[in-house]
Image (tube, rainbow, N blue to C red; front, top):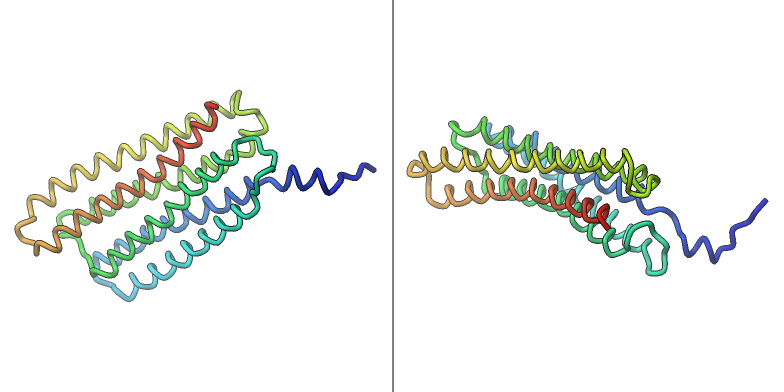
Length: 227
């Protein structure tokens, strides 16, 4: 039986990709809480909104702990199939998904925000689109192991490229939805308190940023493949 010296196991270390994938899953789960929070907010069910916010905060803290653990397990000197700096950058970008979702929920709860009735259905569609973008990029991260095994080439690389395109399309759809919602909000803007209108526009931007954040994760994967 061949025994691997501790020196070599220390150099190669344990693969960080399963932990990275678990972190991505937690971030995606955090974004999914918004699917429940927004309908509750529009219905004025603030106790329910607070429970969703608490759950999202718990998931965001969990993602932070995972992020710190992954960073601590990636000291310089490890041999990895991708650059350490690229991996850490990818980790930071996907962690922003949970952070952005928590921030959106915080504004909705803190301001007791309800969107005008005429755009509530559009807002739900927008949130669904942004969350779908986050879930899609999580699925992309879960392809890392197979992608590495193929040396970032072949059919798996093509599959990942197609998944990146899907993330981009989902993000583009959310951008289009935001434009339409802004137009509808403008039509009823005079019926709202100025501060209320400002925060409604702000939340729209934050939801769009959530989808943008997911797309940036996909683009980081794309850059890693291209190297």
